[in-house]
Image (cartoon, rainbow over the protein chains, first blue to last red):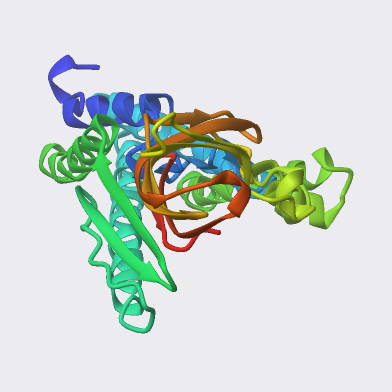
Length: 186
Length: 161
């Protein structure tokens, strides 16, 4: 085994991927100050309406499954990246890296596209409602002003991406780098 | 051969993990589909936000006391606000026109009032009066407008009575 053949981007990406589920939500949404709070990532979801939890137990368990799946992907990537230093296991290493390197990228892409698509849908459907709202995309704040039958509502909405999302993007990018790097060293 | 097994096993494990978690979700709720999907009855969740008073159609605003100043040129009105919500509410603004005997005036909120979740709070209003008011002549309140702050959302209501 030689130290210089260890797939370093893969090791870092693997460790970051393993740590990711413990870093918390990727995205926060607040309607009002605390009327509706949404904290989301692909493996956790908090949806509170005036402090009342609205998340289904099934969804919570699916999140646990995804959390375990992400940790598993990280372990596979880390194992592959460490095995890359061994000539005997280089084929296995490549297989493990190929499997582990792309999954997080898909997860980040699906999460981001999902949020953008939901915002587009919400903005499009507001044309059909008496509420004219243009929600920000992923990050930003907006106040929705609604007047319906003598009731005037002013609803501040704010959303932001967290540091955990930055870690996820970094880990996903390093995963792709590790895949390219593995092709070059093997 | 080993590679082929690995290629099969690698993507299978996360699917098994996910499947096991879905099974665990149902098992944890004694295989009750509704409880697994929604936890509590959605109506119960609404009741957690709305207080029982809202459901039993209790009056939200109740006139408690009306006082005229000695000179009859100022009026004080005390209202009891019964919150229909199980969340804290702040009354930030309230105004109303009042006619009392032959006197008329506009009342305004003295200071912001915080109403506890599902509870009640006294709202004090004051205002100048014109004409010759008398409590014996009866009173009528109109054009009641109020502004509430609930969880950071501002709600302005016109003709709240």
